[in-house]
Image (cartoon, rainbow, N blue to C red; front, side, top):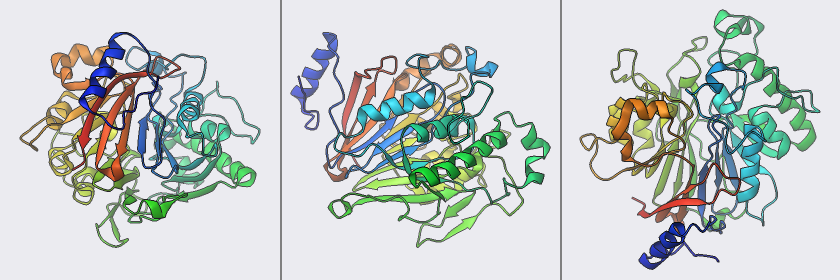
Length: 424
């Protein structure tokens, strides 16, 4: 039986609820031209968001794949690999894409965007990883791109603010002992890029801050003139809000850590706006708002949005009051994998009507028992605490729904539906 959720009237909602009560599994209705679908995929191993634009062009943001050899990964502090251990996290990401990629579209990724070089965003090599025919180890985006061709792969580059290919940089203590295995994984990543460039014509670019013509509609752009992806930040370079101009927070040779260098983009579709920005933060080491941090600088050029992902998974160093008050989303989406997320003070800020008035709904891909034990009843403010989270935008950006899909099932049936929300 097919239900048309596009017209979300009262009867449709009641009928949908009745079906859920009866235990009948309902699949997410297929994408249609004009829809903007944003799938926040939970594997338990890091971030991954698969997006289908109104004309069928698609984008994957991140492909987290933390090593199974880390004690933190296998401990109760971290999430389990879901839906089961029969596949790796990247294989589950591709399995998810295969399920929801429009049947009319070629099996490929038009774009993939890596926000920054940490394991829960682009992968990590270890002794358990297999080697691809191209001579690189399979992890994260490298395994995804081996299983499904990527046309354009966008990252933050490697030259600024430090040259990551410089042997002297790689030999520095902070990199040689890096807990994320960043440099060894980057070496495999660069092998992957070289091989895939020759094999399938992959194009690799650094995110161009200030531009809105780097990630574009590929199929029928003239049908959706109100659709735009604005590049907000990369490597600490911040869009000024006009033209293609930007300014930099960091100087050549000054490395602030990987998180502040994250790529951030805003997606505009008519009235609808969505922001995602990797692991940037805005709280200093003393727990105070840091007006020199990335969150404080990007907030004014992001502006108010309908939906935003929580920076740094909702870690306690993120979502400072100025940032929350400025972007003021109707919906917050938390992509997390550990009991550290969210920080209770983060939850207080994003739910505060003193920072901005009105309703707001919060969804999380997972909530660990340790978090529940510590924060307790305040977590009841979440609409959902487990599952893939799908934002589906309709009517040229005028309205949207939120679906929660079962991440414990390979069928990924609907667990709940919220909306319609009116874009602001």
